[in-house]
Length: 244
Ligand code: SF4
Ligand code: SF4
Ligand code: SF4
Image (cartoon, rainbow, N blue to C red; front, side, top):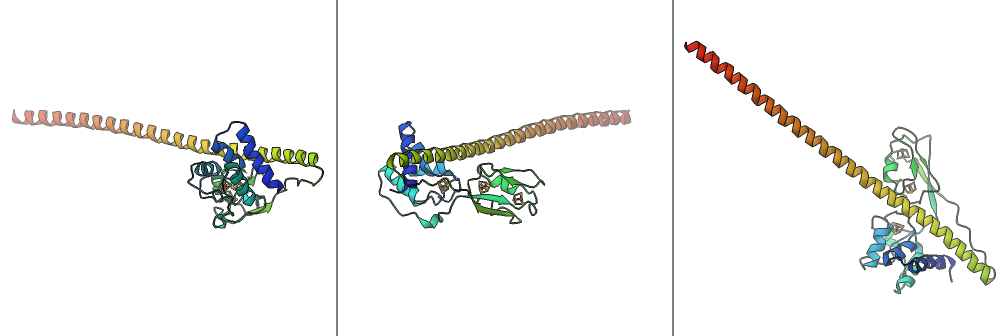
């Protein structure tokens, strides 16, 4: 049996043995690239859609045919061919920025689902290679096309040997794959919570500015009324003096 398939199925089964929900078991098999090629906003939303029957199991190109087969096995469903309408399976890749061309616009920082960029406005940006999932989402937003995708170091292939060594190698590979997925998943979750927090802070700031503005307008109105009343008193007293 294909080793990659066994590793992926192992990830799902381990999640099951750990008492994870069905969504958690499906999510454990998904690559955590967070590329949205499945037409969902990340791996977890796709896992939720599979669990509820809203989506088919063959919509994840980074997971490839092995991923589809592992999902089919885990869920006791019929294996389907990978749906190529969602894209093709590519080798693991990471983004690299051409520092000489980068203008520090930060658009890639905003697009990255796992916060793999370092940099700030007008400062040249760099990618933390270990954190990049190869999702490609930074490519279309770069106004000067200075991001390239390069193949990353593949995970050590399992050398065919006797059965016990093969099992040991499969377990080792599963541990490596799980570490990569867990890291990308938690970075994506942190990214989402950071966006949510920033939005909340912006909303709170806007709300407090509106309150200050309203208070100022109310004060201005009260002051204006006071001035008008004073002017009216002056006018009346002037008229009274004139009639004497
Ligand atoms: S890797 Fe991409 S296509 Fe696959 S489930 Fe995650 S977001 Fe969807
Ligand atoms: S650096 Fe680019 S390719 Fe890598 S994870 Fe971030 S958006 Fe995706
Ligand atoms: S989008 Fe391109 S130009 Fe802008 S900061 Fe990122 S790499 Fe640099």
